[in-house]
Image (cartoon, rainbow, N blue to C red):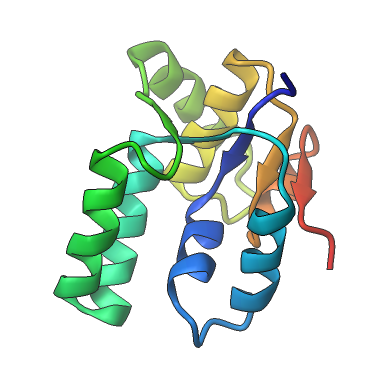
Length: 136
């Protein structure tokens, strides 16, 4: 089995919002993907909030229920060690606009030795340790 691909909020949102500029690319990427998906509880929280803010509460509930059923991806919980590693990343990269959730994603990916993120967020490339897909 191939290593999991970490899914960022930007990808979850693009898959959810048919009007998103990256929606078609996201859908095609997922359809062709031959790797298991993995995401974090922090990314889920950020995704549900973003969906609620932009698409409404009802859509956020639908997305949240899919996450709760684990129908979309394996969910990794952020540990205290991940939070501490994320804080070090967040504090170190003052020249970047990484969110704290981005930093927790980096920490989880490092812990699990994942090198690929499904994301439309350039921060994964800016961090310098990961491959961001899809390339478009």
